[in-house]
Image (cartoon, rainbow, N blue to C red; front, side, top):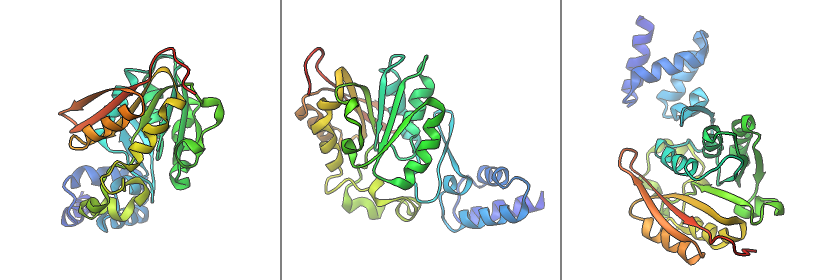
Length: 264
């Protein structure tokens, strides 16, 4: 008990607000190995994200594998997953673009009765190493490359639900982010360009080629940036709506492709 108290005190001194809960998770991850526990506590006290230290992040009831150098799924993104689940019928073709460790795709696939045809794509090979493991239980395919360039041509015009958590932090605001993100997560997962929406515009511009008739593109954004994200989707030929979760402080803009038209 004394040793656990000392761990809590070390974590609290390092600025961990939920030191007691973190101590329990670190102890679980150490698996009764005192030397391993000491190493894990030292990493966390030095400022490494808890999820990187223990090797997983909780997301939509799943334990999603993460690790050093990977973007950690945020709880607010559970709202994006929830919105996507509401649009995904059994057997739908679901694409998690800018997938990182594949948390969104795994969450959607896990919640759609009967399953989906799951694809996940990202430019970061380190993140994709985790994504492959996270989507494997759902038969997911993982593709490496820059946005749509990663995808096989057989997906053209077939994607029913395109779910995206692309970087949307303006370049000038990266320095204001918590050090856990700035220091330990890849810049490519954070930096959205001058106004934060460079990647949103690129995704929206080509979405119709990949969406099935009546298919949906869902993008996480901020309440402040939502009008510009919506404008990008509208310019890409989609009908648009926005939704907000007050509980999670999350905003999702959804665009729908026209039904029954040739989109290629």
